[in-house]
Image: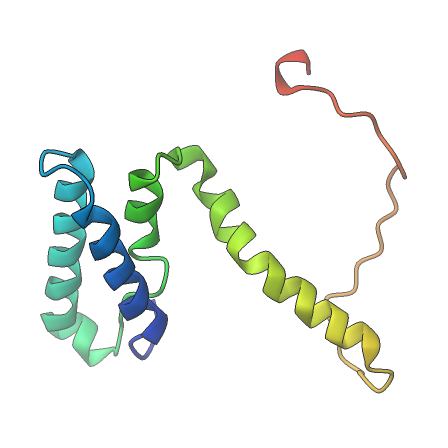
Length: 124
């Protein structure tokens, strides 16, 4: 929840509209999206949220989009992180290229094994 309406949330809401317009009217995600839109309106008009300037963020509608794309709920966290990875890598790359960069926190040094063989989940 942001203190100001996240402009990305408006964009992703429109994207959700476009995606769901392509789905059959009886698709369960249509109902879920309708609920999400109603919840957004309730929050935007509720005195509690208005007094605290609380607004939906960019991820508010992304769950409905992921479901519509057939992505299982168990993978939502992965999708949220994946979408941000390019930004994280870009920030790290800029920081590493700037010799005067004084802040790069948190600093963590990996002390574990250098290489381990992958073991499938069902064999662990």
